Image 1: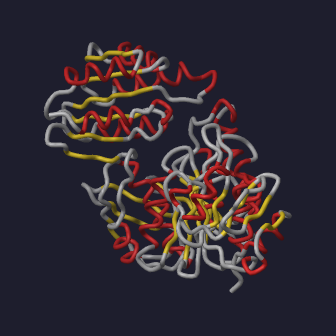
Image 2 (image 1 turned 30 degrees about the vertical axis):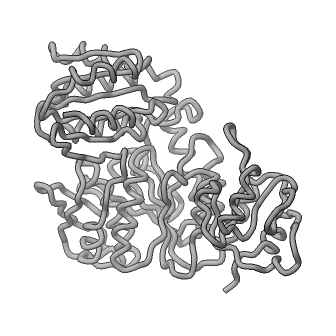
Length: 456
């Protein structure tokens, strides 16, 4: 099959090739933006960021084995070929789209305000029972990361699961133009990035931009427990999943195992009821597993294969990762937060052993509704069997106020800064506590989780 070379990169981007004639047609395998990640044969993309300029590391990239660099300027004393373009950010999208077009394998795109990374891992695990699957790694789910993921597809892969994250209008269209998903999963429409998207209808409009980039025989796989998604017409065949019995794929939690019942009469989804067991915590896992079941059945897997594949699922650090430290039970869910995901985390915490402690921080990018949405979290926590609430951050004061107003005197406290909270952790957290840590990634609550891991 046709593969990527410096010459092709120059042609499709309109860039200028610089290097020896004998290097024009060497094979380029994959792409990275950090020279420390370079593997032999990679394309090194020179991004100029706020902290560092990738052009300064091209020499290191060539020394590590890069076969070519993508740059915005000439590289003095370059040890290999490179292609100069007007914008490496725009060029890498073009390259990613081109590379995707070389492979005729099923591609599953995944987005949502809550749970898209977990859904991506579950879908990849389920499909892994039969297929060799490429999946998005780390946080490569935006306009810079998605093309890097697409460029990792090679001849060994039989399916790809691509996470697609956005924060504004138009971004999903650009991502979908590259990914061209055959199946597109939406996990939930929730209160995220409201500063740019305005309200839930804005979130729905932004997420569903992808459907215009899909083939007529593409399939939308959506959470049917979400009212906005249930009522939305994607202009394509739609398969619903969730906990409600009205869904095409319905999962029920039955004491640590999930019973899966497929209601659809469509032949590609027909299967007898089966059970799955996933090594993870939280009711939301059952809901998200429905997306994995739907994708697996649509791609021809049996219920037994899907159940086998899902046993390989492993939570990602910072995303509902539960650890018994020997002193406490820690639920590290601090990678990110919005009202929907915090409520899901609190509901799952309520099912674990007491004393239950929630350490909650600011949820960012919620716009004018921020104070009220934080206050609602406090009220929800008061009704969720939380024994002690610890809040930290400027907006978290409203979580604290909401909790106090509705908890009937349960213990709660608020700290303005993370430093103040961390200085008091040894007094606040006691042996055998079950502790949830959750906030938006910008709050860097991973430092709190790391400190809790060392307690005892």
